[in-house]
Length: 440
Image (cartoon, rainbow, N blue to C red; front, side):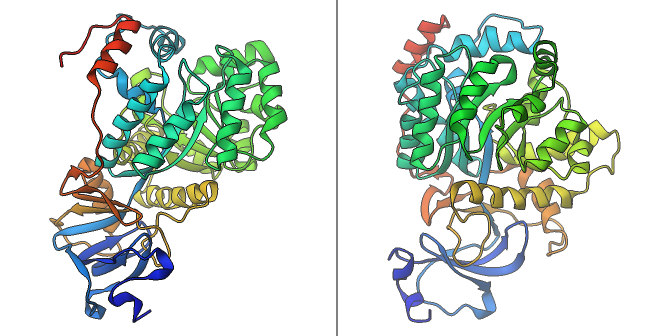
């Protein structure tokens, strides 16, 4: 590799090599206090500065730290165009939140709105250090919607993503299923389902017939209403119902799981599913606090999402730590190393689902990197590096530079991806919904 490192590396795409030097490096597993990373589309070499003697484009990392780009494991990109919209309602239950706010909003979304919302969400995600998104979409125009989102997320912004449409009895089921199957054929689709309480037995049977070994992506027991509906109508709980229809494939994403019980947790573990926690959204919708100890007792893989309530995945990991302890009513109930483990594991899970290599700062991994201004106020080493990240960097994460496969997406805090907000389009959407227009 000595000759190729001087200029270009044909094995990883022939891109001009860059080297970030004099930088702290941390990937939630290994820490280097003063090191370098050489990369183009992929990481070519990582080491200590004492071993660096290469001639190439250098980026000075003094006073900075490199982290892997973060993954948002459950979100709704379409929520971007909702910001500031007053639906003039005061819901008393979670179902009323859905009926009076989100369902009245998303039914008006056209394909052009969906593309605009996806772009706005990508801009904010990159600024928040998120380079990969697992989207759970809903909207008035079903056919072609995931193609629009994919073209924005992966095509325009170069981000990584997994996509699905939330199949629900409020839609044409065949359109929903076919939209999901088209995404699955593209290699980046999951089978999207809304929630047990909006899915009949006939719908679940239809989905079961086509899912094969594809993971599903569903809101599971987000509110107690979901569990009560399953018990009152079908005599079993939410996760048991999904399992009855053989929908719980390996790496299926069950968002929330705030109200599951022990037997449901055992099923989730046994089926090797993933629970995506969205603590800010849970608080916003007043659906309760997840039982972290239940997840831990059952060795369930946990990942973080925002549920469309912003893009700040780093803050969600903090809130998982804080709210988990609150739910246990025990200040020492969760150690920081448990959160570190789940973050590191989340990359492995994403890689399994998407055939990617992200999350480690090692040779051969995609160069999806965050360069963050951080001068530790206290000693920092391999033993306490995650403490600096969780309580310091994650508290207000704003990377200076963001790279995806070696390409700048954010440079010196400014987006390098051209994208304009179309206020006229937003005004038309809000007018259809009945909200006030924006000033342009």
